[in-house]
Length: 617
Ligand code: ADP
Image 1 (tube, rainbow, N blue to C red):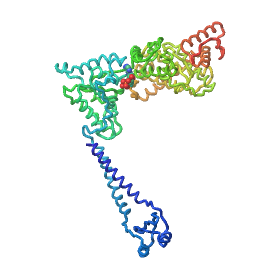
Image 2: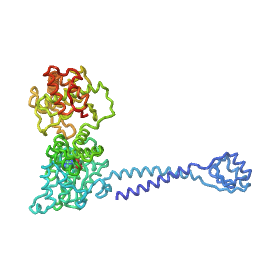
Image 3: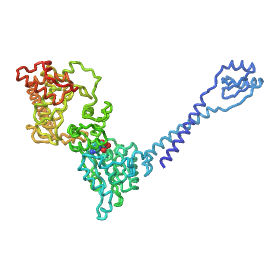
């Protein structure tokens, strides 16, 4: 219906616009104009054969068939002359004036049509009226090439376990309904982006062999009120035709956010209506209709409580980035399809990628394969992974960036400062790589990799982390007697960590075991922390954070002063090699200790050259 009206409207507009264009085209005189004198001369010479009179304007045709136009000051006095010369005379009403008045009439009509059309668009469309169903993706069980099963999803054993039950509901709904059980309607997947929520939803459909309908929450939200709600009704109408089936709504927070938390009046209204439509549909299934609605979000905290009520999304499954075992399984899933070299140890890759999500691991594998291809290798080797990982973690090497020798030296001391502290402080993650090759936004980088996935961080670890962050600035001060802007990001991170220690994790003696902030849950994106302390407490918090960071700075300075020879030596080797790994750093340390014992520790850059470290940069 809406499509029909829209087509009619488009046709009317086309005719109206065409008419208006014709009017203006006609109004423009396209004939060549000649002077009245020239016309009289031609008339005298009997060259004029035809004249068309129109409101002071004369359209002429001469004996050569040419056409002209001229303007006569007095047509009535001209007429006898024209008759005398035997010129054919045509009269004509003022057509252009008529057309002009027609155009004047058209403009208001066009305006009325426009207003009518915009009103029509604001009307909530009826069911089935939406012609933009392309936003809804459908996968039927017959589409084998598109099918995903549990074999494609790795690293989320608990979620899989829980979802086995859902597959059974879909395959044998009668088994449950006979007993009077109501099959759960909605399951909410919550977790950071890229952890495989969509993949898991598709795998359930694949395992159960049922159709899968997928739409994103943001596709429901439109500018015009009622469109989203109609889209929800359409979606369920489609789904009901093919039960049992799965409906997957990605980014459900786009429609399911708390109704009071909107900021744009119109948008809020539209979202509210869409959410209501969704709730109505979820409540409205009959027990014979086995439709399981899976939804995904990375902002469970902002969802409207109505969505989470029993009978709606009452089952929630957390999907978090995989642990080392999970990472290995995901790498193996992708590794099966790739040509890996014999010496490729995926476990090592899994160990060195803490915090990577499934999507990041998939991209790491692909990036490594691309690099191997670009280098002309026949199989993917560990070094390809190393380059791919650096690229993902730190950005692409900025080869074209010209860095002065002075800046390189600053960077080398800065990074060496971080690295020396990471080596000597307790409870730190081992160093993986130190580099002064600029990548992404950073000029240099000291990369530490945890041996195991950590879930709880001890205070000692956090303090060491702040001290390591201070190391860059301290090293520059001790060895180069300078302060540079390079420490900005280190300070920002250190203060963030110290603030959390004081306010959130109750790790400050002066403030006590208090948690003043709500957890911002890292993966929830937006900072949700709400400070609920008094101004006085706020001031003590500030003082405490400052005290903590300053004491870490002093400690860092003490260690680096004591290890100055090692620091200089390391920075020196970094200038030569550009990149050093843990093993090379150990060799440099052993050399320094040996020299110390011999009483001739390297005191200035250049002395350390005696110790051979292979170049990796
Ligand atoms: P989300 O919906 O959580 O944002 P996706 O399911 O869209 O994440 O994941 C994006 C891609 O990352 C998938 O298509 C898949 O290639 C890969 N991926 C993510 N998690 C996993 C996993 N657990 N196992 C295998 N591949 C995964």
